[in-house]
Image (cartoon, rainbow, N blue to C red; front, side):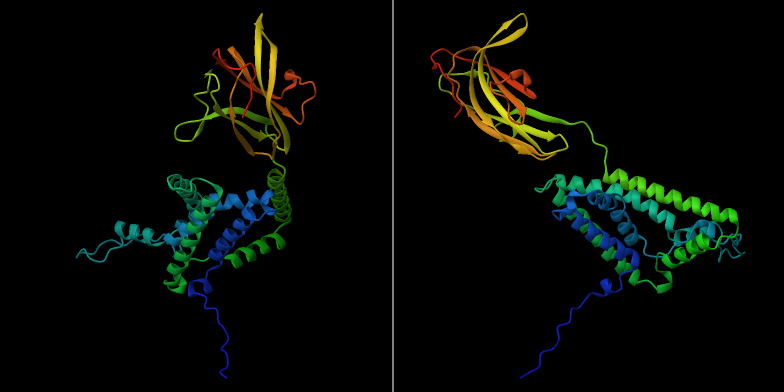
Length: 364
């Protein structure tokens, strides 16, 4: 019986030799997607903490890494020797043209790379959103995350491939160890007592700033609390619009309306919607209900930032002019008898039903 060979997972060379900075970008992209989509974690402030870098920095950094795989140096680090001039034959010169060539060949340094990363991210992410707007998926969370993450990962792979094609001494790399050694020496081995005091102040300032940002993310300032309440109709293309409301009815004629609620209360809320058809009198600019029939009650429960729509058919049988079709919104269950003035929100339509209809009304 032939022996089985062990299964080997062939990892591409690009991934096995992935530079540390590009591996960090790839890891942050994966972590951000987990934070955004995991059921429990996505409700925490970690969603904002990881979402901001993916929106404002990581796509631009990956793009810059793909465009500039070579190491760069700061203009202040370049040689200040005066450029040689052309000889009598007009051949070898390092004059003005040579200086410009040297500047163009030096690449970009770390500060320029970080600045371009922010700028290109701010440019790339809206362009991705613009393209998605003209696709069937639209500008929604899942398509945006897939598109931005896919762009960033593809740029990381391209940047790793381009760096691998360069000689080792010309590749860009983040000097993590140099930064750590320099920072350790500055903090733990100050030259003077004044430097030691300044180091303590610097560390305290960084901790205070970090704590302030973390608190602002974890405990965001609560904005105004309110609930949206509205009526909509369906147009010829099937879209819900705030237009063309039914105002004239024939006997037995039915029309459709859609009532909507938007919860912006920053908490879960229970609502009750009471629909009435009323015969009213207006006396001294005051509307008095003379006769009312309750047509329907809805009892939705909405989480913060959740929207609820309910379409229903209206078939009025109470005749008369300027009948009021009133929708009353209550937080929780309204009292009995119904107190219309205690409603949290109210919308209404004035309708006219021609003679010949029945004396009652219903909502089917």
